[in-house]
Image 1 (cartoon, rainbow, N blue to C red):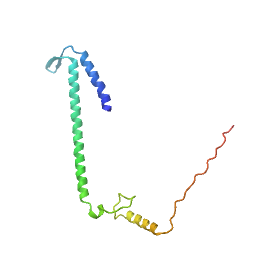
Image 2: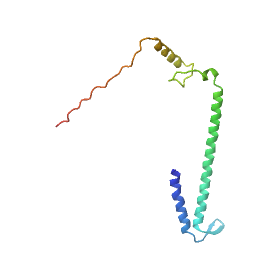
Image 3: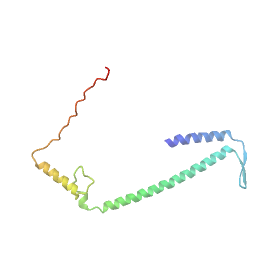
Image 4: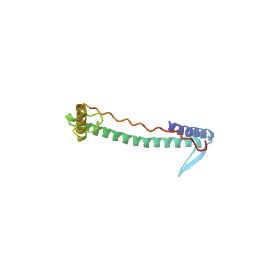
Length: 140
């Protein structure tokens, strides 16, 4: 959308320039000479620059698409190499990114098992903030 706000005024200015400059002028570049209006020349140069810019952006986009395709193939290959017993293992809710055989997961499961086995459940302590007293401003 932002490109539209930039491109639209430039296109309108080029069209106004082409409409105002219709008188033929003799133009030359090195040894070549031709007669054309400056407005038509401006429109042709703008179209050439637009096509060149579009082609250069398309080359970058194609390169990015190729990288993304390679990355997807690598992810598929890595997922295919995962051991079967690790993919279906149940994991603790807070440790979804840790492997099932991780010491952290084992310690968490042991802690959960001991908490479930103990009859006394400890509740978290609730801390209340101190009351805020309103002070009188000086001179009041």
